[in-house]
Image (cartoon, rainbow, N blue to C red; front, top):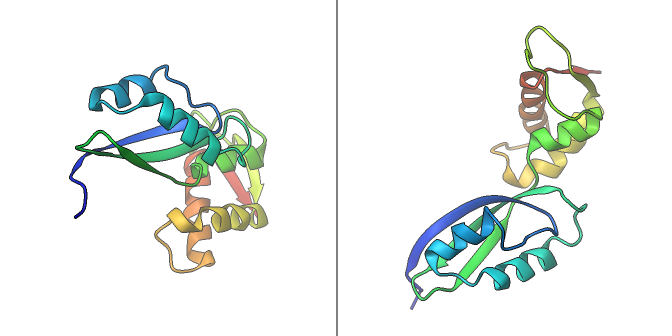
Length: 142
C-alpha cells in the first residue's frame, strides 16, 4: 500500500551546498524529517552541477517521517543571467537594456529547460525563454 503523504516542501537550494541552516533546517524540522539525511542525499544528487547553482527542489514528506525529493532544472532567469554575463536583471526592463543574448543562446537554454517547460517543441520553448529574457531587460538578438 502507498504511504500517506503529509505534505510537500518547495525549496530552492544551491547545488552541493545543502546544510541544516535556514531555510532547509526549519522547513524539514517542522515536519520531523531527518535534516542531515536530506542534506547528504541532495549534495550527492547535485554534485554534477556547478557549485552554487540554484536548484528548485520539491520534497514529499510522508506521515511516517520519511521523505523523497525531486530536483528540477535551474531557473530560466539564472541561465539568462549567466549567458548575458550579468549579476542581476534590469531595474526598468521596458526602458533599459541590462544585457544581450543571441537566439542561439536562447535555444540552448530552452533545450536545457525543456523537461520543466510546458511546451511541445524547442521553438515554443525558445519563445518562452525569450519572453523571460525580455521581462528581465535583456535584449534578444539574432
